[in-house]
Length: 189
Image 1 (spheres, one colour):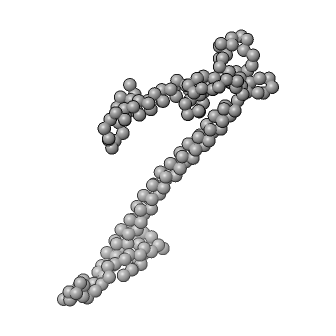
Image 2 (cartoon, helix red, strand yellow):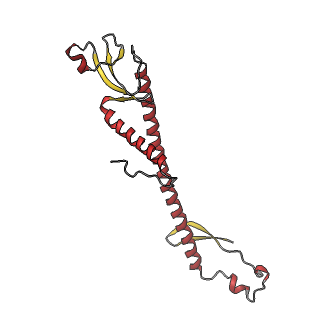
């Protein structure tokens, strides 16, 4: 049985309270006084029930909003990650298409130069090795990784350390018995 109730502090808003259906013969048992079990009682009890329903609705809404906010933050983070992946892929492709007269091998450093004509090319000689006779504008040094991505020279040490940690993780995890929790013990040493 549904009852609409106006709350004292919100007279223009009604809340619907659902009461348990009444029966003079619940579960086949005849009641001595159905009036005593089915009466509505004090009207303030109905208001209290309505307030409780409304409070529940407010909490559910707040909880849903909080959870949706977390999801929205995760979506923004994933979108940013996707942009970064696409940008890195674009840069890597650009570097792979630079002119080069040597076969590029993963793990080696290559140095990008630009001729006066605008042609970009890789060399195995660094500007320091060229010395004062460096013939073209130096654009940057890059290490070709084993996944065929490029790491700028200034990030090589950091990237190598990250790869080292992942190698340790992979080596340690295969030597350990099956475990439900990740084991990062000793990886930062």
